[in-house]
Length: 211
Image 1 (cartoon, rainbow, N blue to C red):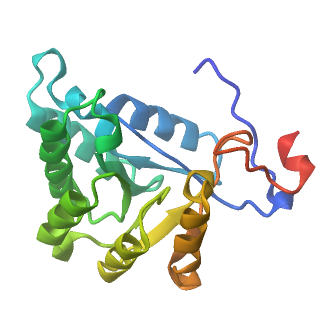
Image 2 (tube, rainbow, N blue to C red; image 1 turned 60 degrees about the vertical axis):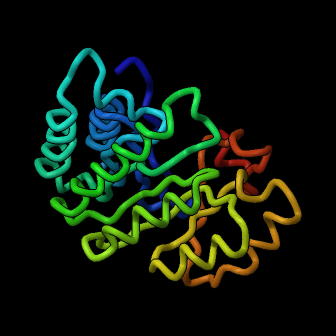
């Protein structure tokens, strides 16, 4: 694969890691990585900034979706969630709004078929995100809206939908961000990590993690 996969050190209290898929190709790579260690698992889905790939090179979008479904259903021992999927209106230069809306909703058909929980992405698109999810809520097993940067009211709406909220360094850049995070019940909160130098300079406390 051209990269060295670090072994999971359970002495650092890391017992399982989920490798995120952001496109069909990346989801296959995430699965390949997950198969290198019993502690690794993965997601399958298309990030909102990658939705143009549904139509790349003249491919039938339904065929592209079917490939995602088949990748997930044929590897259920390692695929633990659908995603990353959702809406990102902060980065429309990568994928226009209409494409994101169309293929987020189409991927929720994939969610309904696989019964997998969802790894959601929502950036500057709260109302559209909630409108789409509400239409499909009965067929969504559960999920987390990750890297949350929304308002207190938006956090409450996510919780009303029955989802967890994931936070990382991107969620803690301002005092307003921190105040919002403090409003989320601990039982609905998930703490995320990334590379040791990612997310606004927030570092792990134990220096062994950086070795």
